Length: 180
Image (cartoon, rainbow, N blue to C red):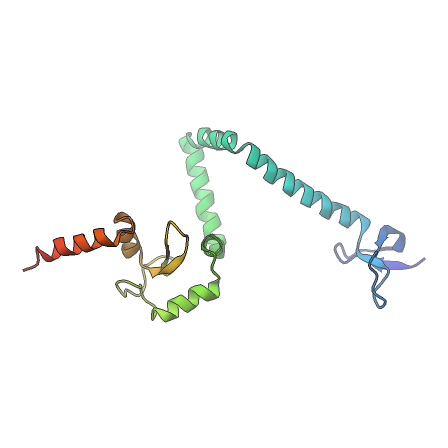
Protein backbone atom coordinates (compact mmCIF):
# COMPACT_ATOMS: atom_id res chain seq x y z
CA UNK A 1 0.00 0.00 0.00
CA UNK A 2 1.24 3.49 -0.92
CA UNK A 3 2.13 5.87 1.95
CA UNK A 4 2.54 9.63 2.20
CA UNK A 5 3.90 11.91 4.93
CA UNK A 6 1.46 14.53 6.21
CA UNK A 7 2.98 18.02 5.89
CA UNK A 8 1.29 19.13 9.13
CA UNK A 9 1.83 16.32 11.61
CA UNK A 10 4.81 14.73 9.82
CA UNK A 11 3.49 11.19 10.31
CA UNK A 12 3.71 8.72 7.40
CA UNK A 13 0.20 7.43 6.64
CA UNK A 14 -1.63 5.38 4.08
CA UNK A 15 -2.80 7.43 1.07
CA UNK A 16 -6.34 6.40 2.05
CA UNK A 17 -5.99 8.84 4.96
CA UNK A 18 -5.54 11.76 2.54
CA UNK A 19 -8.17 13.57 0.45
CA UNK A 20 -7.72 13.79 -3.30
CA UNK A 21 -6.64 17.02 -4.96
CA UNK A 22 -9.50 18.35 -7.06
CA UNK A 23 -7.32 20.77 -9.02
CA UNK A 24 -4.46 18.34 -9.58
CA UNK A 25 -1.34 19.65 -11.27
CA UNK A 26 0.33 17.10 -13.54
CA UNK A 27 3.59 17.05 -11.55
CA UNK A 28 1.99 17.16 -8.10
CA UNK A 29 0.69 14.26 -6.05
CA UNK A 30 -2.96 13.48 -6.57
CA UNK A 31 -3.38 13.60 -2.77
CA UNK A 32 -3.53 16.68 -0.58
CA UNK A 33 -0.53 17.56 1.61
CA UNK A 34 -2.47 17.32 4.89
CA UNK A 35 -4.06 14.12 6.12
CA UNK A 36 -7.82 14.10 6.70
CA UNK A 37 -7.39 14.38 10.48
CA UNK A 38 -5.14 17.47 10.25
CA UNK A 39 -7.47 19.05 7.70
CA UNK A 40 -10.42 18.48 10.02
CA UNK A 41 -8.58 20.03 12.99
CA UNK A 42 -7.62 23.03 10.86
CA UNK A 43 -11.22 23.57 9.74
CA UNK A 44 -12.46 23.20 13.34
CA UNK A 45 -9.97 25.84 14.55
CA UNK A 46 -11.09 28.26 11.84
CA UNK A 47 -14.77 27.69 12.67
CA UNK A 48 -14.08 28.14 16.39
CA UNK A 49 -12.22 31.39 15.73
CA UNK A 50 -15.11 32.73 13.63
CA UNK A 51 -17.66 31.65 16.28
CA UNK A 52 -15.59 33.39 18.96
CA UNK A 53 -15.44 36.62 16.97
CA UNK A 54 -19.19 36.52 16.33
CA UNK A 55 -19.90 35.84 20.01
CA UNK A 56 -17.70 38.75 21.13
CA UNK A 57 -19.48 41.09 18.70
CA UNK A 58 -22.96 40.03 19.83
CA UNK A 59 -22.13 40.11 23.55
CA UNK A 60 -19.69 43.05 23.65
CA UNK A 61 -21.59 44.99 26.33
CA UNK A 62 -22.06 41.93 28.53
CA UNK A 63 -18.34 41.09 28.24
CA UNK A 64 -17.42 44.70 29.07
CA UNK A 65 -19.61 44.62 32.20
CA UNK A 66 -18.18 41.29 33.39
CA UNK A 67 -14.66 42.62 32.88
CA UNK A 68 -15.49 45.77 34.87
CA UNK A 69 -16.83 43.66 37.75
CA UNK A 70 -13.76 41.41 37.63
CA UNK A 71 -11.36 44.37 37.58
CA UNK A 72 -13.22 46.14 40.43
CA UNK A 73 -11.50 43.66 42.76
CA UNK A 74 -8.05 45.21 43.52
CA UNK A 75 -6.44 41.77 43.58
CA UNK A 76 -7.71 40.97 40.07
CA UNK A 77 -6.75 44.43 38.84
CA UNK A 78 -3.16 43.97 40.00
CA UNK A 79 -3.04 40.46 38.50
CA UNK A 80 -4.27 41.88 35.17
CA UNK A 81 -1.70 44.70 35.24
CA UNK A 82 1.12 42.29 36.04
CA UNK A 83 0.07 40.03 33.17
CA UNK A 84 -0.14 42.99 30.76
CA UNK A 85 3.33 44.26 31.76
CA UNK A 86 4.85 40.82 31.38
CA UNK A 87 3.15 40.29 28.01
CA UNK A 88 4.45 43.67 26.84
CA UNK A 89 8.00 42.73 27.85
CA UNK A 90 7.81 39.38 26.08
CA UNK A 91 6.16 40.79 22.92
CA UNK A 92 7.54 44.31 22.33
CA UNK A 93 6.84 44.17 18.59
CA UNK A 94 3.09 43.57 19.14
CA UNK A 95 2.38 47.10 20.41
CA UNK A 96 4.37 48.61 17.54
CA UNK A 97 2.58 46.44 14.97
CA UNK A 98 -0.82 47.31 16.48
CA UNK A 99 -0.05 51.03 16.10
CA UNK A 100 1.07 50.60 12.51
CA UNK A 101 -2.15 48.73 11.73
CA UNK A 102 -4.25 51.37 13.52
CA UNK A 103 -2.75 54.21 11.49
CA UNK A 104 -2.43 52.25 8.25
CA UNK A 105 1.34 52.51 7.86
CA UNK A 106 4.16 49.99 7.67
CA UNK A 107 7.37 49.82 9.70
CA UNK A 108 9.18 50.91 6.55
CA UNK A 109 6.99 54.03 6.20
CA UNK A 110 7.60 54.86 9.87
CA UNK A 111 11.35 54.51 9.35
CA UNK A 112 11.18 56.70 6.22
CA UNK A 113 9.35 59.44 8.15
CA UNK A 114 11.91 59.12 10.94
CA UNK A 115 14.78 59.57 8.45
CA UNK A 116 13.01 62.44 6.66
CA UNK A 117 12.71 64.24 10.03
CA UNK A 118 16.43 63.66 10.70
CA UNK A 119 15.62 61.42 13.67
CA UNK A 120 13.81 64.15 15.58
CA UNK A 121 10.36 65.44 16.43
CA UNK A 122 8.71 67.25 13.49
CA UNK A 123 7.96 70.27 15.73
CA UNK A 124 10.70 70.71 18.34
CA UNK A 125 13.43 68.54 16.80
CA UNK A 126 14.06 66.62 20.05
CA UNK A 127 15.71 63.30 19.23
CA UNK A 128 14.13 60.74 21.56
CA UNK A 129 11.29 60.79 24.05
CA UNK A 130 12.47 57.92 26.27
CA UNK A 131 9.79 55.43 25.29
CA UNK A 132 10.15 52.06 23.57
CA UNK A 133 8.81 53.55 20.36
CA UNK A 134 10.82 56.64 19.54
CA UNK A 135 7.96 58.93 18.58
CA UNK A 136 4.18 59.21 18.56
CA UNK A 137 2.43 58.87 15.21
CA UNK A 138 0.56 62.18 14.87
CA UNK A 139 -2.60 62.08 12.80
CA UNK A 140 -5.61 64.16 11.87
CA UNK A 141 -8.49 63.03 14.09
CA UNK A 142 -11.11 63.89 11.48
CA UNK A 143 -9.57 62.20 8.45
CA UNK A 144 -7.25 59.70 10.14
CA UNK A 145 -4.36 60.78 7.87
CA UNK A 146 -0.90 60.46 9.37
CA UNK A 147 0.91 63.81 9.55
CA UNK A 148 4.33 63.19 11.11
CA UNK A 149 6.21 61.78 14.10
CA UNK A 150 6.16 63.88 17.27
CA UNK A 151 7.61 63.67 20.76
CA UNK A 152 4.99 63.04 23.45
CA UNK A 153 5.11 66.65 24.70
CA UNK A 154 4.44 68.19 21.27
CA UNK A 155 1.72 65.64 20.56
CA UNK A 156 0.04 66.38 23.90
CA UNK A 157 0.32 70.13 23.24
CA UNK A 158 -1.40 69.85 19.88
CA UNK A 159 -4.04 67.61 21.42
CA UNK A 160 -4.69 70.05 24.26
CA UNK A 161 -5.21 72.81 21.69
CA UNK A 162 -7.67 70.52 19.87
CA UNK A 163 -5.60 70.56 16.63
CA UNK A 164 -6.62 74.20 16.17
CA UNK A 165 -4.03 76.42 14.42
CA UNK A 166 -5.88 79.59 15.55
CA UNK A 167 -5.74 78.53 19.22
CA UNK A 168 -2.04 77.75 18.86
CA UNK A 169 -1.44 81.21 17.30
CA UNK A 170 -3.33 82.86 20.16
CA UNK A 171 -1.22 80.92 22.67
CA UNK A 172 1.97 82.06 20.90
CA UNK A 173 0.82 85.71 20.97
CA UNK A 174 -0.05 85.34 24.66
CA UNK A 175 3.39 83.91 25.51
CA UNK A 176 5.20 86.53 23.43
CA UNK A 177 3.39 89.23 25.44
CA UNK A 178 5.18 88.03 28.58
CA UNK A 179 8.68 87.79 27.11
CA UNK A 180 11.04 90.57 28.28
